[in-house]
Length: 279
Ligand SMILES: *[C@@H]1O[C@H](CO)[C@@H](O)[C@H](O)[C@H]1NC(C)=O
Ligand SMILES: *[C@@H]1O[C@H](CO)[C@@H](O)[C@H](O)[C@H]1NC(C)=O
Ligand SMILES: *[C@@H]1O[C@H](CO)[C@@H](O)[C@H](O)[C@H]1NC(C)=O
Image (cartoon, rainbow, N blue to C red):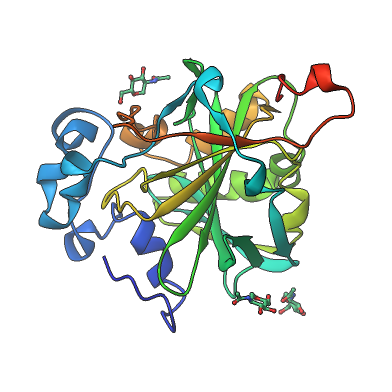
């Protein structure tokens, strides 16, 4: 995997994160979520994928709230998002939204990470206290040096997610295109206000891990928002419908922590008794 992001043409970005594609013949080896190309085999599918099996900082993980260490210095998430024109894409192994010129920055340890794309996994990849949720949104940011910062939101089944509700027709277009045989369809979404997507309470978990798809590069600072949001059953189906059967469940099994520490941050509440409950 190339680490330098600078001056990459727009459509190099999807391939970095989702090498499985309709033209996998040219782009690397396709991976899947079961059987011959399933997660336990990823490391041997391609010489570039060895981290998937040999890596010691792999994602996703099961987050045990009780063992997460409070770190005041992490601070509130610092974003400078701006409205950006977006393209919804059938990315073969997931449904993704790309922001051509980026949608602003997230600052982490003094470093800028630009929001380039986001995508959904069903069911969730990260678990909290052993619970797997219905879906997980990954907002993928990348710094100039190639490092990633991904902000994950978990969704339980319930009422509609307002952002997905807004792009319902665009998601339906991906499904129509798929029926028409176009498995890598793109739909222009127009301007998206990314700052409205991340409804945050300010509480989150942080750990160092990897991409959850090959090449499983261990260059990701993960932020898992502790507030679990809601998604309707119909919306989960909309996210799965454009994908081939082997990618409808596109959740990598949890990986070993190997001694890593999960940290957490929560805004100090005036009511001290609430401090322990970081939801
Ligand atoms: C989005 O695209 C439209 C049409 O090309 C353009 O007028 C608008 O300025 C763009 N918005 C942003 C935030 O780049
Ligand atoms: C991060 O980007 C902003 C513009 O969005 C810029 O003002 C700032 O200097 C950058 N910071 C670093 C550390 O590069
Ligand atoms: C998704 O696949 C994983 C194995 O890769 C399996 O453990 C899990 O039960 C599946 N989930 C659903 C909802 O089918």
